[in-house]
Length: 338
Image (cartoon, rainbow, N blue to C red; front, side):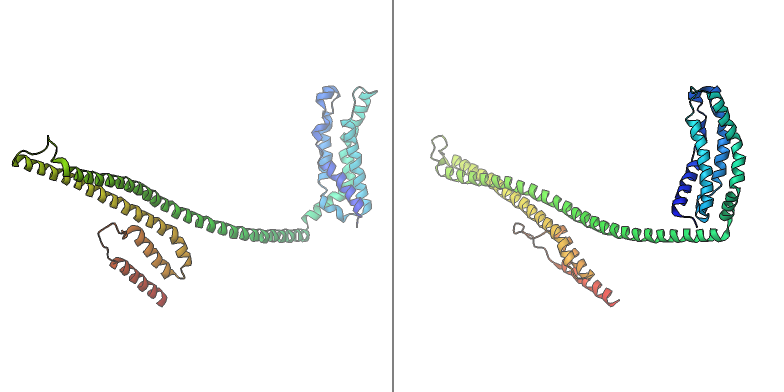
């Protein structure tokens, strides 16, 4: 078995040659066509191809002497590549030096193969060994299973986190939706309350007009230009007073009814807003599915049915609400029995 230091040195040197780019040896751009090493590119590629036939995975099977042999061969060939890369056309006897390096690299492939063919053969045999392939396949399958198990755990945790996030999002969206719907009732309640304040002001004004005209009527007949001189004029004066009182009284009653109507609508919408805002808390506090249905029925009845406010003369009956509750109790009992 090879020692770690020798194995690492051979591994690095072999990797360096296998990954070397032979096209960089041409140097046609800086040396020109006549002094370039374009002829060395194909022989260098052939040399590198021989080294590539020695699998890096087979190096641990070799002895120190065998690794040293491979290491020395790779260093020698890489030294030639380095000399070509460092070649200076301006140096003395550059033409002969270039010719010598080209000659060496052109015949190097056959010499190299004679030295390392046994390592190439072993690498090919090792790569085609079914037992080795089976071991590698088992190792690969085990690695895939481990990674799959790890990914499955991560996906399970991610799904759990996603479900929790989705539940929070749904809850938030539901609460936001309820709050948004309650906001509509709030706006309507405020608008109706503002109209009720206006009609209350009109009611005060008409009441003051009725009272002022009543006081004025006590002394109106004493004015010289109004005082009746005969029964006909007296009848006309009385008729005028009655007509004015009737109109003012009608306007007073109309203003009061409008005030009561808008105040009634304001209170109803405020009540519906409160029903929506408290519905979520009531549902969460419910113990069972039947109870949730009952709470929903009551909330819907509160929102969509008119409520008694003290301003309306109508009296609603709770027969429909009671009927709904009884129906829900019956459904709940049936579900429990099933």
